[in-house]
Amino acid sequence: MKKVLTALAIVAAFGITSCGGPDLCDCVNLRDERKAEIKEAGDDKYKVKEIKEEYEAKREECDKLIEEMAEDKGKDLAEERANELKDADEDKKKELMDEWAKEAADCEKDADKEEE
Image 1 (cartoon, rainbow, N blue to C red):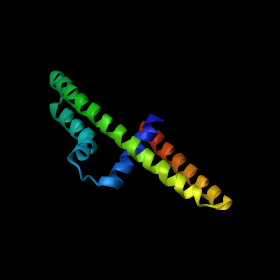
Image 2 (tube, rainbow, N blue to C red):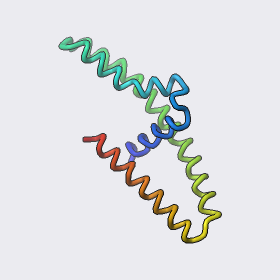
Image 3 (cartoon, helix red, strand yellow):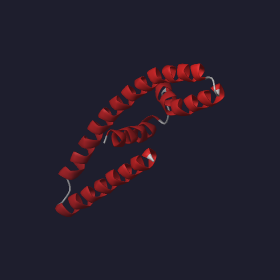
Image 4 (cartoon, one colour):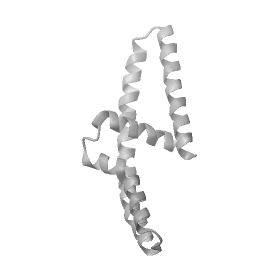
């Protein structure tokens, strides 16, 4: 579930900011930068360990940022959907619920693919 929320937060973050803030862009690029530095370090285990430790602190900051964004986006999304349901007739409510369930299922499938 945490991976699903993280995936939603990242998607939401792109939609909201389009990498408008340097913190978010740093987080998006963090993994690729780490991989490149580890590859460059080659067989130097000390250097690889140093790189991993350096990026661990950055990753923790990114995790916190993403959690905060997910909370904010979750609140906004819940409010938006509640407003949509409030004004909808029964058929429209069912249609919206089915649509949202499909979105959630698609997100879970994407998260499962990332784990593989």
